[in-house]
Amino acid sequence: MDLLDRARAVRERAHAPYSNFRVGAALRADDGRVYVGCNVENIAYPEGTCAEAGAIAAMIAGGARRIEEIVVIADSASPVPPCGGCRQKLAEFADPDVPVTLASRDGQTTRTTVADLLPGAFNASHMDGI
Ligand code: THU
Image 1 (tube, rainbow, N blue to C red):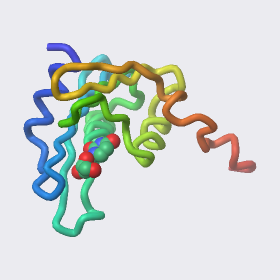
Image 2 (cartoon, protein in one colour; image 1 turned 90 degrees about the vertical axis):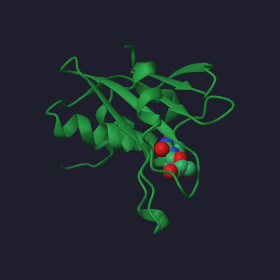
Image 3 (tube, helix red, strand yellow; image 1 turned 30 degrees about the vertical axis):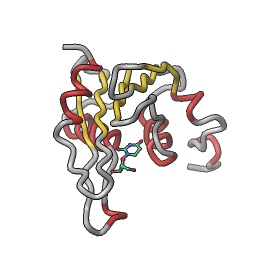
């Protein structure tokens, strides 16, 4: 099963009763394994988490450290890009040239990279002395 299929499958498990917008993410990590996540909303709306955050948390908990490729699929008519917070999260765990594939419900895909999603990213080089 490829990353798109894994993302599509985990999207079905999303907990999104407030937005009704289900998102799934599947990433291949530096250990060769696939980690998945879906959005998990909360009645206290800001406590909800994005699909990308879930996949990253699973990767770290699973012992891997770096994202080599990621696919995100949403309930949308066209491929919807990650939110701003998720772009920063991706930049923490992926090199700038890592491919990000965005998919729509009906299978349209757009391929981009972490650097294209977050140009001028804040990173450790901006923090002198640490
Ligand atoms: N969402 C994600 O899971 N990933 C994104 O990059 C965009 C937004 C979720 C959060 C919320 O549960 C729902 O989509 C609507 O914003």
